[in-house]
Amino acid sequence: MQEAQTRRTTSSTSQPNEEQPLVMIVDDDAAVREALHELLLSAGMQPVCFSSTRDLLDAGLPERPGCLILDVRMPGSSGLDLQNHLAVKGDAPPIIFLTGHGDIPMTVQAMKLGAVDFLTKPVRDQTLLDAVTAAIEKDIARKKEALLIKKHIERLATLTPRERQVFREVARGRVNKQIAFDLDISVVTVKLHRSNVMQKLQAGSVGELIRTWEALPADKRETHED
Image (cartoon, rainbow, N blue to C red):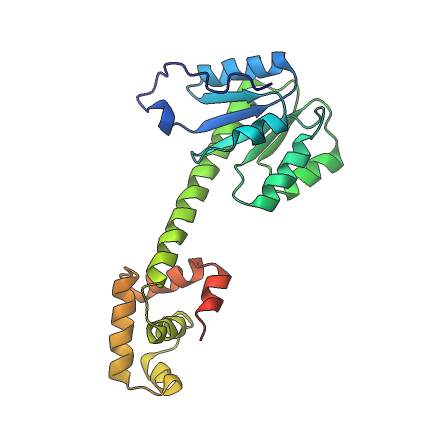
């Protein structure tokens, strides 16, 4: 049964609740859920509690930045099972494991899959809050980077096939004369395409153009190779 799915309180911050990072707690122990809920509320965060991984998946993950605090061993699907499931789907929020039954192999497995921290109960309040803060910062940065990549891909789609070729060659460090020779066009034409590329991709310098190329997913670069 899902607990406190939308339990909201007036925060001491001026930031609206719907814009606050969300801390999702998954633990089958009601006392632990309540204690974590109160701790996070007292720190000005917005927690939401679930008694099982199934309850969380049924509710769906929000688009807002945030993180997960997961117990490892629970009836049914475990915290590690959930981590694996989210890793396969991609775009998983950062995860903090909090358990009374941890061991080294379990910790290694969790960290290899990208867990932010693996904490053992009982845990100091400040230790947990520090881990949550780090996880939220990581998720905000991740979402910001994903948004930037999305913009790069959208702008890439506005390039003509020839502009894409010039973009690729500039990103590879080729100078105008080399590009002109390779593509069998004039240097003047290369300069024109290069100017169009920088304008369409909103790049203020060749260095920025190269960083845009490097930020693109490999499959997007490969798609426009020819």
